[in-house]
Image 1 (cartoon, rainbow, N blue to C red):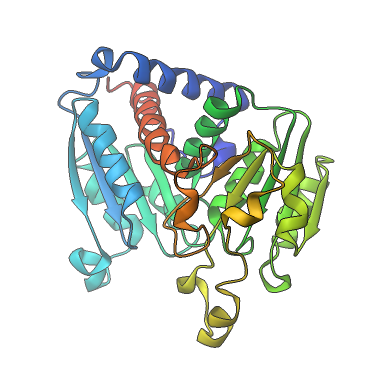
Image 2: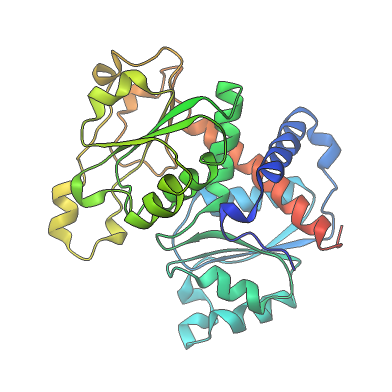
Length: 307
């Protein structure tokens, strides 16, 4: 049974195929209105979420399907001590596909091994968030018209940011990509990401703590929040939370066609004064996420032979 737990579970050809499908959904929504009729998506969210959960649910409804859901660990038998594997086996009896978010790294893998239906990882701790990356890829493609020859700046929490790790994995497979990694020393990209992805594939990258100096060379700026929920020490969070705040003044030297992205939720790392700037693409990412999730649901259900 095919599941998607990590962005590398999808080949570049499959990523391109999903983007083509998503673009076709955007152009021809009526063609897909009954594609998943009588099919059920189970959203199992053991960690808070607004965009991802609602995006998956909207995606399934717009495909003509239905949704059953668990909105928190406390509302499920996990509160009684039920294992992730048993939950996945149980839900497989009720639904055709699962989207799962869990605070523990590897939980989606455990679920996929136990389930008899496809499982989509909707975020597992600080590890992976492949469908956010699908939203990011479609945004890059629609805004820049290409997936190669790009300088991508990643700014903020690069240590715990699962969206950052997934995006590095995905974009490293396209040609002539360069990364600028902007973060405090304490929140640098983990060494395993640098070693296993960037260095292994010979991807050029620069590490810096200086956002303003890096901005003029960027085609894409991917801002992230410092994630309070990943810190064990409140003092460390408070010290680092406002490390980078993007303001109109800081954009003075940036390219006119810079694409500013953010996986959201935003706290204060992007000033609301930037929302009306034509380079602000973070709310476009939200829409693109729904279309890519529609494309992924279709792909996995077709491969499972259920539509």
